[in-house]
Length: 329
Length: 134
Image (cartoon, rainbow over all chains, first blue to last red; front, side, top):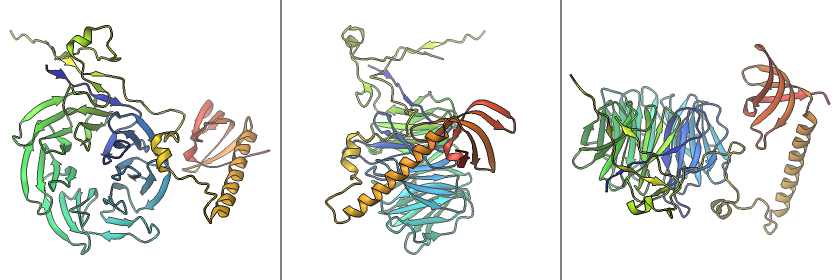
């Protein structure tokens, strides 16, 4: 029986949501952090979207946010020229790392000991979190603002995407650029999939998949509208993408066919990510909301409940909320 | 002539148990009674460790400072206070109260360059200092 997707809307932010990240799977489930232009990044329970807490302290728009694997630490990058590290259990600010310009991206290594930052001053910085007072290791090379910087290949290399329309793969030790990819359009997003060594890159209306070691192209898919972010499912059977036309697209990764498109957001989609178990994906939009979408529509998971037709009309139904049928133009 | 049809979706929407819980307007969250918090947060007072005495002294000083801060807020109530804020903003108002996390100050008669605001909330993160006559 075909079912219609019911997205779960997480409200609370008052300005556009520009970045989001999931933690790994922990004994307490998995978590989601959202970066917002209102300066107040929020932590939520990953499978329900329930708000857990807000990290207070930044004095400007937060452009990037990330969690470590265990969801014990969070890091944020902001327009107030700082990156901050937080205790993700208590919500307390642990470290403020001053930069010389807007910070756009933050990323922990797998062991949570190092933090990579990148931003408008065009320099990649690596902070040793056990020696926060020490100067960070700096890697220069990009000729304009860095949008995203990620650890990859066992934290031995760094992938960075900048407004100079290049993506560079750096060796952490030699600080040299090992590979460079040039594009005609600005790169809008980048995601690294460690298991499978794939990098997902979006630019213009294209979603591109590349080998994370060689930066060789695997395949590209073109969407109907300009895409701001895409994410590949952990089992690599689907990927989702969203952008300017407010819709979320779901594609079959193997055949490149568009499977579904979902309306729901009231503004362009800035960021989209699959959960670590692949059961849902979250999208953040200009409309200030985060929405959670099921990968397998109709399955019982998190707050979604699979209800058989007989149960829907039964008086004993425990379902509390059933969205009204909508007229689809 | 072209006729447009509106197609009514016959698919049943997936049911949900409830909507995701939103932020608590009165607090920044991170519930200390949640199982994760209790399991992962070490207590600040440890009387069995060798540095126990130092910790106790630090805790006592922290308590003193906190108590002084709270008493200052109480003394400020209904007084004319001058607030020194970011961007070289200086305003005067009658202080009403603070919220529990000291995120906002409720004030009345806020004197601003645009006129006097009868009731207002000042964002504490914007306040650098404030002064008042005892």
